[in-house]
Image 1 (tube, rainbow, N blue to C red):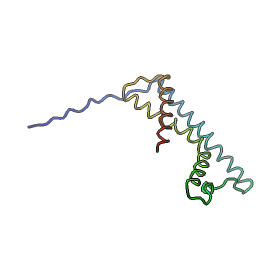
Image 2 (image 1 turned 30 degrees about the horizontal axis):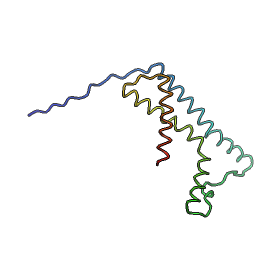
Image 3 (image 1 turned 45 degrees about the horizontal axis):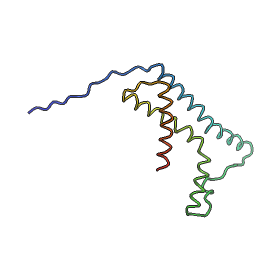
Image 4 (image 1 turned 135 degrees about the vertical axis):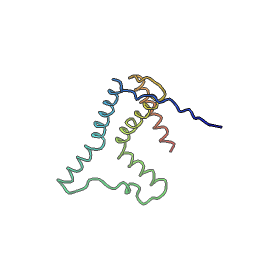
Length: 135
Protein backbone atom coordinates (compact mmCIF):
# COMPACT_ATOMS: atom_id res chain seq x y z
CA UNK A 1 0.00 0.00 0.00
CA UNK A 2 1.49 3.27 -1.05
CA UNK A 3 0.81 6.55 0.74
CA UNK A 4 0.97 9.78 -1.11
CA UNK A 5 0.86 13.04 0.68
CA UNK A 6 -0.55 16.07 -0.98
CA UNK A 7 1.32 19.19 -0.09
CA UNK A 8 -0.34 22.54 0.20
CA UNK A 9 -0.07 24.68 -2.89
CA UNK A 10 2.79 27.13 -2.71
CA UNK A 11 1.76 30.71 -3.28
CA UNK A 12 4.23 32.96 -5.06
CA UNK A 13 5.58 35.80 -2.95
CA UNK A 14 3.45 38.91 -3.15
CA UNK A 15 4.86 42.32 -3.86
CA UNK A 16 4.27 45.04 -1.31
CA UNK A 17 1.46 47.42 -2.17
CA UNK A 18 1.56 51.19 -1.76
CA UNK A 19 -0.40 50.85 1.49
CA UNK A 20 2.23 48.40 2.76
CA UNK A 21 5.05 50.83 2.02
CA UNK A 22 3.17 53.69 3.68
CA UNK A 23 2.58 51.48 6.71
CA UNK A 24 6.26 50.56 6.92
CA UNK A 25 7.18 54.23 6.67
CA UNK A 26 4.76 55.19 9.42
CA UNK A 27 6.07 52.38 11.62
CA UNK A 28 9.69 53.45 11.04
CA UNK A 29 8.77 57.06 11.81
CA UNK A 30 6.92 55.97 14.95
CA UNK A 31 9.95 54.01 16.10
CA UNK A 32 12.49 56.76 15.44
CA UNK A 33 10.41 59.59 16.91
CA UNK A 34 9.06 57.46 19.74
CA UNK A 35 12.41 56.05 20.78
CA UNK A 36 13.97 59.50 20.57
CA UNK A 37 11.28 60.91 22.86
CA UNK A 38 11.09 58.00 25.27
CA UNK A 39 14.68 56.78 25.55
CA UNK A 40 17.42 58.52 23.60
CA UNK A 41 16.82 62.17 24.50
CA UNK A 42 16.34 61.52 28.25
CA UNK A 43 19.56 59.49 28.34
CA UNK A 44 21.33 62.19 26.33
CA UNK A 45 20.23 64.79 28.89
CA UNK A 46 21.34 62.60 31.81
CA UNK A 47 24.71 61.93 30.17
CA UNK A 48 25.26 65.62 29.45
CA UNK A 49 24.39 66.61 33.03
CA UNK A 50 26.62 63.85 34.41
CA UNK A 51 29.57 64.91 32.24
CA UNK A 52 29.25 68.53 33.39
CA UNK A 53 28.62 68.01 37.11
CA UNK A 54 29.92 64.49 37.82
CA UNK A 55 26.81 64.02 39.98
CA UNK A 56 24.14 61.42 39.32
CA UNK A 57 20.70 62.94 39.88
CA UNK A 58 18.83 59.65 39.80
CA UNK A 59 18.50 57.01 42.46
CA UNK A 60 18.46 53.24 42.09
CA UNK A 61 15.00 51.80 41.51
CA UNK A 62 15.49 49.28 44.28
CA UNK A 63 15.70 52.09 46.84
CA UNK A 64 12.04 52.86 46.12
CA UNK A 65 10.84 49.82 48.03
CA UNK A 66 12.78 50.82 51.12
CA UNK A 67 13.23 48.19 53.79
CA UNK A 68 9.75 46.76 53.40
CA UNK A 69 9.61 43.31 51.80
CA UNK A 70 5.83 43.00 51.80
CA UNK A 71 3.16 44.29 49.46
CA UNK A 72 3.69 47.93 50.34
CA UNK A 73 7.33 47.75 49.22
CA UNK A 74 6.37 45.90 46.05
CA UNK A 75 3.71 48.49 45.29
CA UNK A 76 6.14 51.38 45.81
CA UNK A 77 8.67 49.71 43.50
CA UNK A 78 5.97 49.12 40.87
CA UNK A 79 4.96 52.80 40.90
CA UNK A 80 8.55 54.03 40.63
CA UNK A 81 9.35 51.52 37.89
CA UNK A 82 6.23 52.46 35.92
CA UNK A 83 7.10 56.17 36.06
CA UNK A 84 10.55 55.26 34.72
CA UNK A 85 9.33 53.18 31.76
CA UNK A 86 5.84 54.42 30.81
CA UNK A 87 7.05 56.34 27.76
CA UNK A 88 8.87 53.32 26.36
CA UNK A 89 5.82 51.14 27.03
CA UNK A 90 3.62 53.64 25.20
CA UNK A 91 5.85 53.34 22.13
CA UNK A 92 6.53 49.60 22.35
CA UNK A 93 2.95 48.34 22.52
CA UNK A 94 1.76 49.70 19.18
CA UNK A 95 5.16 49.36 17.50
CA UNK A 96 5.32 45.65 18.27
CA UNK A 97 1.66 44.73 17.99
CA UNK A 98 0.70 46.47 14.75
CA UNK A 99 3.08 44.53 12.46
CA UNK A 100 2.10 41.18 13.93
CA UNK A 101 -1.60 41.94 13.58
CA UNK A 102 -1.15 43.06 9.97
CA UNK A 103 0.80 39.87 9.17
CA UNK A 104 -1.96 37.74 10.68
CA UNK A 105 -4.55 39.70 8.73
CA UNK A 106 -2.66 39.25 5.47
CA UNK A 107 -2.26 35.52 6.14
CA UNK A 108 -6.04 35.33 6.59
CA UNK A 109 -6.58 37.14 3.29
CA UNK A 110 -7.60 40.54 4.59
CA UNK A 111 -7.05 43.48 2.27
CA UNK A 112 -4.92 46.15 3.89
CA UNK A 113 -6.58 49.55 4.12
CA UNK A 114 -5.86 52.59 6.22
CA UNK A 115 -9.10 52.15 8.19
CA UNK A 116 -8.32 48.48 8.85
CA UNK A 117 -4.80 49.40 9.94
CA UNK A 118 -6.07 51.99 12.40
CA UNK A 119 -8.72 49.61 13.74
CA UNK A 120 -6.19 46.81 14.12
CA UNK A 121 -3.75 49.16 15.84
CA UNK A 122 -6.30 50.29 18.43
CA UNK A 123 -7.56 46.75 19.00
CA UNK A 124 -4.03 45.38 19.32
CA UNK A 125 -2.99 48.01 21.84
CA UNK A 126 -6.13 47.47 23.93
CA UNK A 127 -5.81 43.68 23.77
CA UNK A 128 -2.11 43.80 24.59
CA UNK A 129 -2.72 46.11 27.53
CA UNK A 130 -5.55 43.92 28.84
CA UNK A 131 -3.44 40.78 28.55
CA UNK A 132 -0.51 42.49 30.25
CA UNK A 133 -2.73 43.27 33.23
CA UNK A 134 -3.55 39.59 33.61
CA UNK A 135 0.03 38.37 33.70
